[in-house]
Image 1 (cartoon, helix red, strand yellow):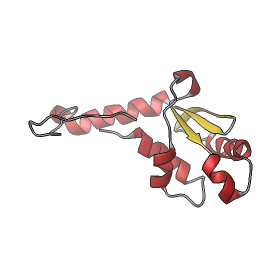
Image 2 (cartoon, helix red, strand yellow; image 1 turned 135 degrees about the vertical axis):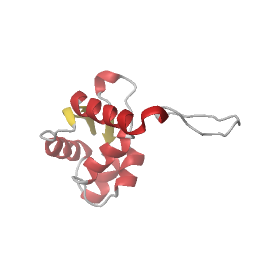
Image 3 (cartoon, rainbow, N blue to C red; image 1 turned 120 degrees about the horizontal axis):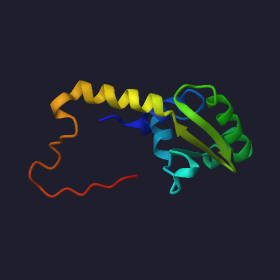
Image 4 (cartoon, helix red, strand yellow; image 1 turned 90 degrees about the horizontal axis):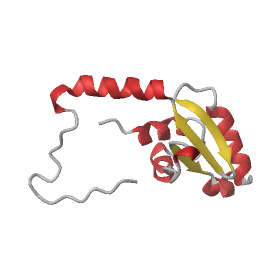
Length: 121
């Protein structure tokens, strides 16, 4: 299954110095309100390293991402970079994933007949 959070982290890693894609992935949030985007990246932790105010960092990151094809819209709100995934890219990735997995798409061997607790973040 496609992990879009990892893809977003990889795109952000290309614009943020000093953090790995894994560190960025752990910082990415999913906004409670979908009107705020599909993913949000808080810039508070970067303030100390970059010696800038978080809203300024968010603006710089948003400006770098605005011309990319991965997002329909990127905006900074206070100290967050809010990202709206490109529906076209999302659908292409989804269809390619379904086509590649064919009959196995959506199936899982998680738990192997044991109780499994799944948490979404």
